[in-house]
Image (cartoon, rainbow, N blue to C red; front, side):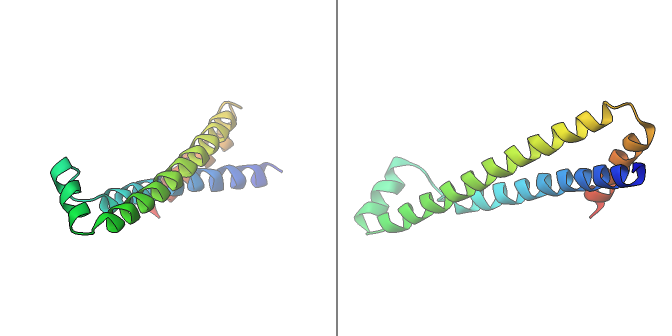
Amino acid sequence: GMVLSVLVILLLSVLYETVKIGKAKVLRRAMLALPRSLSQEALVEQDEDGGGRQHDAAQGRWFLFHVSQTLLHVIQVVVGYMVMLAVMSYNAWIFLGVIVGSALGYFV
């Protein structure tokens, strides 16, 4: 039972690190989806050139990235609190499982 518990906690720690990296990648994609310039002049020029649809598409992509990042944040918080509660059991093996899982997740 203890080996299974340590293995589950190790996998939760790996999941925590994976979600953290995934959230950073989604943030990067969201930043790349934003228009280069958000100035009023650039937006007016886009509307005059018929680029309003491109602007709306960019806003839609950014919104989806923002929703994805929000969901990943919720998952990260939930998994983080679960790992914290496991560590608060004051079991040395569980603690080592968290440390090894975090190191392995970060490495991968």
